[in-house]
Amino acid sequence: MFDVNRLRVFRAVIAAGSVSAAAERMGYTPSAVSQQIAVLQRETGLTLFEKSGRGIVPTPVGRQLATRSDELMSTLAKLDLEVDDLRAGRTGSLTIGSFGSAAEQWLPSVVATVLGEFTDTKLSVVLTDPPVSGVRPDIDLVTEDPADPPTERADADRIELITEPYVVVLPREHPLADRPSVRVAELAEHRWISDDVGEGACSRITRRAWRSAGFTPRAVVQAADHHGAIAFAAAGVGVSVMPSLAACGLPETVVSRPLTDPTPERRIVAIVRHQNSSHPAVARVMQLLKGAVAAAVAA
View (cartoon, rainbow, N blue to C red):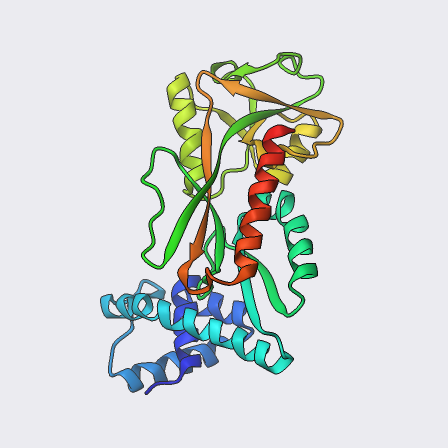
């Protein structure tokens, strides 16, 4: 049997891409991380990394060990939470995963209500976009590209909440700001503020809309998220496209307008794990989430 902490260090090196980056994230020295990896290789009898240029990369068996350990690390994380519950006298725990805009717009009122009604339940919210290694929420709010197959998991139910349109966020004095809606092709000649980081569903959805309209946007700013994109739009730098949920509560200096021809859309779904699906708090969270979605549609 090998040490679980060494397994965590090993997974951190793979996730970070290097020993030094993993050491910085974990608060260790690079030499301590290297020692942990060396001991784990002796314990398992496996060569987990090989040299590549000035760094190292996982071997095929190293990658396989990392993949096979996902379930173990998730179980250990869950066990840690349950031990905390037992120590504090709580009767259960509930973890909600979410992407940023849903966590901001829907979850505050949901969490406040559930904490008030289920005082013995430990409730935590984690951002899972991008996914967090070792964290498997009981309820996970995720986005889907309608062009992709629905998310399917053998250990969970998939509950579709809403298909959400994208909008364009514009400076209030922008020439297109007085339109009731904006065709995607009309954005071709305007400066662009991108908030698409990575290759997720949102990035694919917007790229498909540009291709359909026959252009590639001229991005002058790569913002870290929708908050940054809105700030640049408010300063008059350019325009940005984002899901309508991300464009709530805009400052007075910007406006949002529906997009047409085409209207980009994303699905928002809840992935509810079977393991805790019978917990009354889970049913209450889903009831409150559906209420929040209905209120957003009606607004």
